[in-house]
Image 1 (cartoon, rainbow, N blue to C red):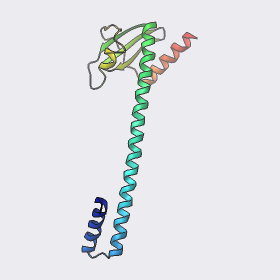
Image 2 (image 1 turned 30 degrees about the vertical axis):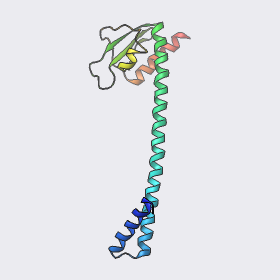
Image 3 (image 1 turned 135 degrees about the horizontal axis):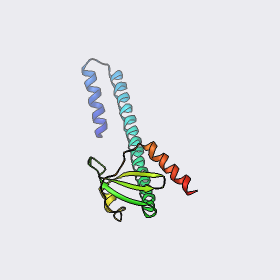
Image 4 (image 1 turned 135 degrees about the vertical axis):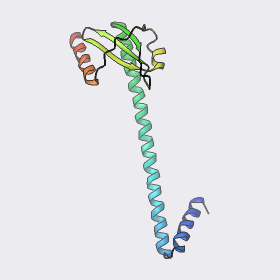
Length: 144
């Protein structure tokens, strides 16, 4: 008898001890097993989706970093250490004709992809994501 069969038998016996008929107890145990099996399948799917999303995010970050590294070759750039280091340790600042643009980067990114960028005092201006996108659009418009 497998472990699953033993557990199902234990459930059936427990229900029978409570006065539930053998037929009803068997149905209940099967329904519980089906429910648990369904949840296991759902968990596997959710785990796969989470892992795929993480892999996709990593690819997006790599692309972002390569593009930012290219921009640091074209425009004045520096990194500045952030006071709040919960996740991001640095800000990468670009001084472009379209204005000041900044991205948060990790310590690892600072030491690898952006090791060539000089550190400078903090002139990082906080901006919303929308403001940064608007600045990038202005930059693209100036390049055309």
